[in-house]
Image 1 (tube, helix red, strand yellow):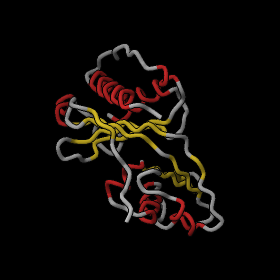
Image 2 (cartoon, one colour):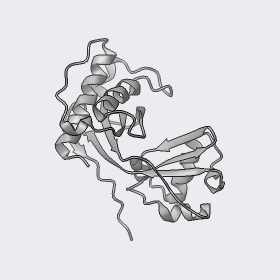
Image 3 (spheres, rainbow, N blue to C red):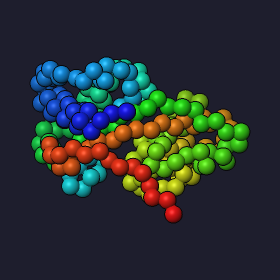
Image 4 (cartoon, helix red, strand yellow):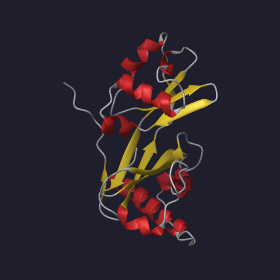
Length: 202
């Protein structure tokens, strides 16, 4: 969907938004690529460096806004992830910024819930689990980083929704998948690379 240059632009922009917002400054003017006018899902992730522990991750799974708007919103909100205390300027040199550019979620069709694991590809798919008002999402890179198989990925996404770990076997539960292109700083304000999510198969 996006070139390495566009991915780097997204990460650099998210970093500038994060730093300006936390310091209480006006956001700079950005010369967005034309492709960022299209509505797109996006998540901004902040990780500690060098530990690479999660520090904040907020975004929009669906194409609700033009990418340029969703990117700015997600970057600001990631600094106030309710799971953590607000990001402070003293942390800027000790974080790396990651941006995930997403395809629209699609419902995974299955006559029997036990078919779901066979329809999920680790390294390609992110998951959304929905049952009633409960909803949980995990990005594609999470399963790769945690070395989960498809069933483990389903279980952890259920728990992310605040549901029982095996709620994916409930016929009332709806499972959605999406894919993404992930770009990340290698070091604070350093080079930006595309994360390769493909998993080698035996």
